[in-house]
Image 1: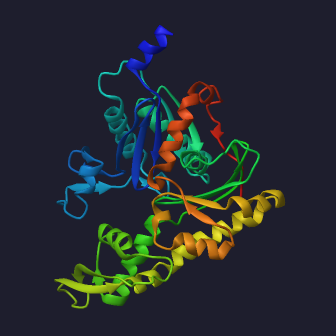
Image 2: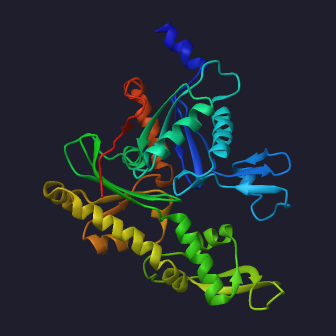
Length: 353
């Protein structure tokens, strides 16, 4: 209808992957329009936002005392409501444009283990940021849709979504999560493990950005056929009172050992989820296997290790970093149905283990 065409000109429905590390925004009929770090820089003197997203992340470790760089999301949920409100407001404005007349309807992906308090916090932040109406979907369901799994079929579709703060595992059938598990151990926990290893093994103090670079450059979950090395620079902790810069060379093998604890935690929740599902669904997993998504799924050899630990075939889904937000985008094609559901409902919620 003509009215629908005019209406879409003024505002579009949007899907948001509100992640611990990054926030991605999908605008209906336009695709992904924003992908920025979930980081906010605040002037402590005025309590005003100095920068958001990519610009704020570039300030980590480099700011004067009066500038605080904050990650308002922790373990996949809101840790600082006021800062999250402001971050979402800026991101939504960037995504939809300043000249939009009508406020957008928003579909937000949240962890499957989120509490009722967490649900209210996300909804309130979205409304404060300018949303007209808000609906929530569990991240593993959105990720499964985003990588193209046939979630509406009466079959076992297993997804593992390893983000920044949480690992989400779910078995999906007939458009709903049958059983799921989540653990607050993912990319961030891997970075912390590397930071601790550098302190304990090399007496070198490094920041989270450096740890992330190490993880991406030479990190692995499985023994590599060709070991790698990397030079790392940081503060020398060996000389008490004199933290001078120092460089050390590290190996991929030592980083693999450093990552053993978080990797083991992730495998445990995967096995627990499989153990708890119905026998008929478990049998179907032999044929269908497991699909992985999220940035953590790209850790070298993690798919191979999970396959060995579960006895199931494991594949990394298409465009894993954007699986969740792409899933919200595909779901927005049925936006009228989504937003006609009760306001306090969450799409995909099933039995948790």
